[in-house]
Image (cartoon, rainbow, N blue to C red; front, side):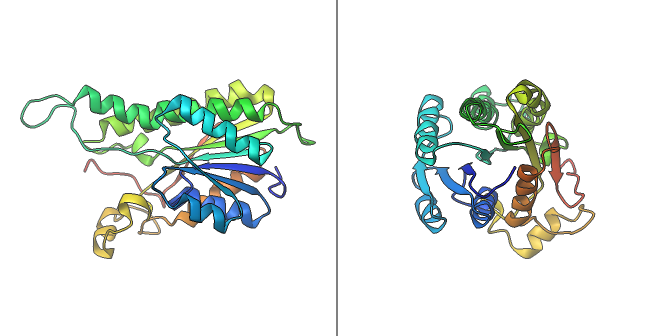
Length: 254
């Protein structure tokens, strides 16, 4: 699809990988809506890109659908949706003291990552389906964010692994569901990136965390996620897959 003249909705776009993607999209002539928490830097990011900011909470499912509808209404259409919202926590299936992983914590991580992603995707797809298709029959592209933890979850990541694994697993099925509408669905699975909780890690600590990577042995940069996301949007053959962006890293058990 062509970016110039297209409209994009960036969930988690106030910072990190999603912000970098929104920047590249805007630089190529796309219209941008930034969706993120009210206390985020979303307003200033949106202003810098000539777009609008819409405060939201991805776990408020009905509220999220309403915010998306408002944003898309003001954009005029929706062709691109990138979602990086999510998070995790550390807790073993069975702790050393013999107590179990709290079910409430497991459910919260699933809700935040997997259920919220599915809700955002179905809402975005419904809006995209009303677009006039381009000459190749395309109406829109959706990108979700998993993690290499979906494939090599570390000790204590059982909830996060289940959530991100679910996102990766639903990608092909969702792409098949939406193929008749001309909507593509892809997932990016990054390794450790220099954003969010990892942004303040000293260089020595970052080197230790990435020592098992093939090359480069460092944390990823938000712009490197953005390059992949933009390539997905522009290439019609990229559909139904989860792409690792990880420098060849495989997580060790801990």
